[in-house]
Length: 485
Image 1 (tube, helix red, strand yellow):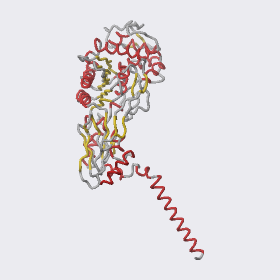
Image 2 (cartoon, rainbow, N blue to C red; image 1 turned 90 degrees about the vertical axis):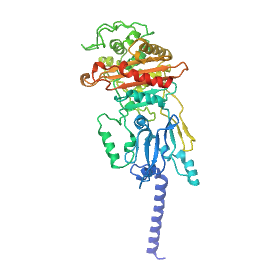
Image 3 (cartoon, rainbow, N blue to C red; image 1 turned 180 degrees about the vertical axis):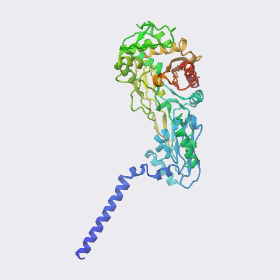
């Protein structure tokens, strides 16, 4: 073999070796990256090439896969009671990807999760059609329905939690949407999706997890907790040094109560909570200072940037740098304080659970198509929000609010109910209609309990007709009854 031919042969051999290395690199090292690439349309086609697993509520699927036998897609996602469960499931669309549980649990639902490898391999060997696994939620269908029907055509949200475990029993946001309307890829699906995106009422916004509101007077529970935890008061019957007219520190602005007839001057903590006295808790907050208030709020979950249920919740916010007058307003749930409905349900849940705040969760179990359990949630504590002694004092305050204060519409025969109303101002110069809040818990004689938070954005046409006790409390009552009665 002459020298030129030998050089060409060596060069060709190098090219072959390079091709082999590159092929193995792509197939072995980069395979997962290419497979998960958002521009890889094969993922979308594969997702709907066989029946997708279901999202389960109380043993029954709230989703299904309809056979359509299209050119690229063999199946299309559909929902049962779609608007009621959309804040839980999210959507799964041939044209618009997935969201919420449909997205976070896509590996299980689509059957591509590595934990399903052996099951999929066995099905392939036996000729059985591939099928996704199921995701079992913690949702209580009665509670979900009670919250959804209670909110009705109002704009708002409701969350119910089992205080002992953190299991989310209801997660409702209204107005809602039907994910089935744009599950395909047709022109009608595109039109339906465009209409939802353009709707000023934002029906696709998950208000229970992704919207924050000024919590108003429901935040007074956090302020009272900070007062007890820092030794400022020992009993709910301790008198406060609240003046009849309280001026915000460093200003000439007087903080007012809802009514001039409220007995807030020198009121005890119990009276201040029963009548939801702004002056009582505004002064307590200013006296404690921003750092102690913020530390207590954060024990309840405020400012948590990674609160996953597993859907990532928008962080509730307590400001770190308010001036003293701002801190007084923060202490009554106004100024810069913001909270999701999930957060205020967590506050009530921690109080009901003797101060132990459990990690809220929405997925109880992941399982294969043959019902084999792949993973099972284990309840764990997120924090000890307050001591058991403080929690019991807060329970006394909340139960007094329902028995003889602003929350009487939440009373339920045979159950111990505690609650706190809130009417939160918002908008430029408080020009917007107030938000009506109610955060609560109920306990049954069998030691079962439930914590519920409800917020209504537009419960009445006139500002003076809006109150947490009048609008939000009856909704929370219906949810608590549905769980414990």
